[in-house]
Amino acid sequence: MRSTRNERSARRMWIALGTSWLWACSSDSSRGVNQATGQQLPEDGTMSMAPPGGKPSNDQTGSMSGAEGPPNASLDPGAEEPVDPCTLDRDFDGIGDCEDECPADSFKRAPGACGCGFADNDADLDGAIDCTEQCPQDANKTEPGLCGCGASDGDGDGDGAIDCQEACPFDSERLEPGACGCGVPDDLPLCLRHRYTFDGEGATLVDLVGGADGTLLNTTLIDTGNLSLPGGASEQYVVLPSGIISALGPSATIEAWVSWTGLGGSWQRIFDFGSSDAGPGVQGNGATYLFLTPSNATDLALRTGFTNAGLGAETFVTSAAPLPAAELVHVAVVVDGAAQTISLYLQAELLGVQSTGTINLARLNDIDNYIGRSQWTFDEEFQGVYDEFRIYSAALTSEQLEVLVAAGPDELPDELPQPPPAAEEPPAADAGPAGTAP
Image (cartoon, rainbow, N blue to C red; front, side, top):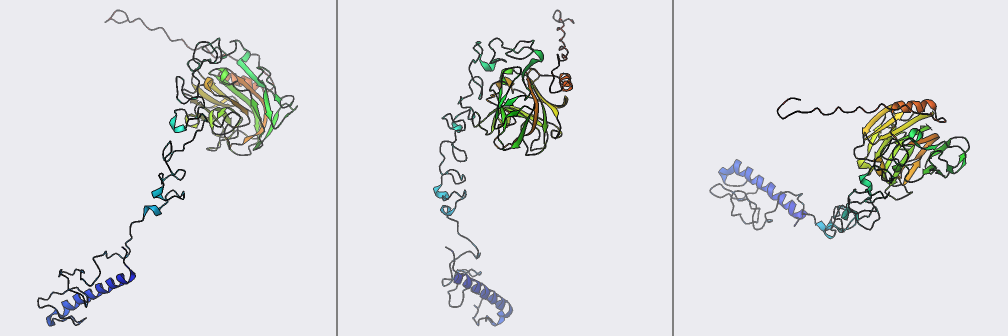
């Protein structure tokens, strides 16, 4: 129990008196009298520390345990008693710790299904709480199965092969891509699958090659041969049909002639093909995507990113500077499925290349294919002008891109230079009979 102010004052007085007695004893002991108080000292020269009127202590060494004095208490006047845990609320949720089963979790008062510190959410809205399933971002699966989360274990093209085990999951005639990928003949001119010139009027963006027309949102074409977007939160962008990117196969080249204003926030999108965790047509957090931004927030430079499984699995290529502003430039992103790489080009000049590892373009869940819009909620729309946009189902080389840049946005070359054939490995030498040189 905490001592009162009077008790603490009394102790300080007794200590002071005791000090006086000791001084008097040492300086005047020959007379046997304490000069400070007049108290007669014992004949053996020792002295009791009991205060006046108190009983001498049995301890003649200076103990303060006299019966009339206070009990043996700490001499620290600032000593505090332990705090009652029921008066604490460490997570500031309005519930005392002794009544809160999650005293360090301000969002929970009881562990629930997932325990303290973990939300009992169902992010993919599949009816299973995230902590109880292995595919919390896949509304169609709770376990990885054969193909993993985010990929179907089905046979979408009916060719007898599970989609994740073939390179052309949307082409019933092929298991492996040809010269122009999946779904088209090998002699498709330039391997060009989709071409958008932004000609005409109205809210339809015509595909001059593949018939996959896009739709303009909150804006229209005005017969100028280009599309100007104001950016910001204008909600003006283009939606291309779902599935046109994954149907290309494992390789592709996306190219555009654009003029960026250089204004507005970071993470604007020249294009963003994929899906978010919020569902079709809704921005959220990017789940699967292939994108190109004129300036990212990390180093304010031109960047492309690619993932089949969210931000944590993303691979990206960043240039040394943002996209040049206020001028018409050619940009291209090349995904090479055979080499497992993604490359970034500006005016046919290679800016960088990165390995894609197991990220596969044919596995991209491209529900929302945007021109000028991001899968992520807080990213602004593209602020600038589109002159032409093309999609090829082949990984074009630097030499091929140089020809396209030279031809410009309004012309197509008759052909592209073909890369040299891959060098064949020499046949293995015959080792000869055992124990002899070949």
